Amino acid sequence: MAGLLDRIRRAGRPPFHSMSPTQARVAYAAGAEVLEPPRAALPRVQDLTLPGGDGSARAARLYAPSQARTGVLLYLHGGGFVVGGLETHDALCRQLALRSGAAVVSLDYRLAPEHPFPAAADDTWSALRALADMGGALGLDMTRLAVGGDSAGGTLAAVAAIMAREAGLPIALQLLVTPGTCAHADTASHHLFANGFLLDAATIAWFFDHTIPYHHRHDWRFAPLEAPDLEGVAPACVLLAECDPLVDEGIAYADRLRAAGVAVELEIYRGVTHDFIKMGRVLPEADLALDVAATALRQALSGGAPT
Image (cartoon, rainbow, N blue to C red; front, side, top):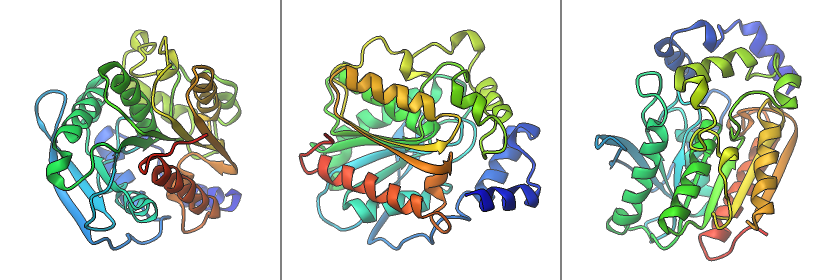
């Protein structure tokens, strides 16, 4: 990991916080899959649309490892609510489908600053409800439904799990990969890993400032650690990176889930940074994390759950 960080520094890539959102999206898309294995071939990859929270049609993509009727994971990509999309997380979604045996539906939710908070959360919830209703027509088993994501997508997945509990929509698993959960970047790990560990403090502030006004950040739909009650939400698989500004809030969220009686599988991968799960070409920890995520999905969507 240290060698990889050194190569990234020597490449001289401008940080996101020095760019406009449009420029950052282009830069992120160009490099998003460079460190991932090639996109795995799957027997079924299908573009489709799901309704967004504003009634618009949002692009989505279905990945299935077979033609069998399987459970499904709604996946939300990372990118600080500002960058990312279907293409930046295509390889990751293919791996999750291939390894778990479940279908994966990736959602292209609206991005800030053009669509500030709570647009992404609204799109996620609208798509999840629609998928639960229409999944059968896609050949999916909607009695086995999970939600997951990485980074900001992990935040959205945690929020969707709370919304699903409120609506009485059964969710078998929430897969949270290096999620953001707190209102402000003020934990010890935010200070310890503020600079030099891929996701720096200035970029986090840039993401936050483009997404949501300061005085709204305690809304649990942005910071699920602020949710008043987590009892009865879906079992969780939480995958964290040790050298990540977000690691403390990920641990805190797992602890709150456990305190509320929710089954949680928590894994912390030593010596790696934020976004490590998308670095499978060079980091064995990425491969290990994908296997853990796939196993959790396979068990949950066949009737089991993390213990």
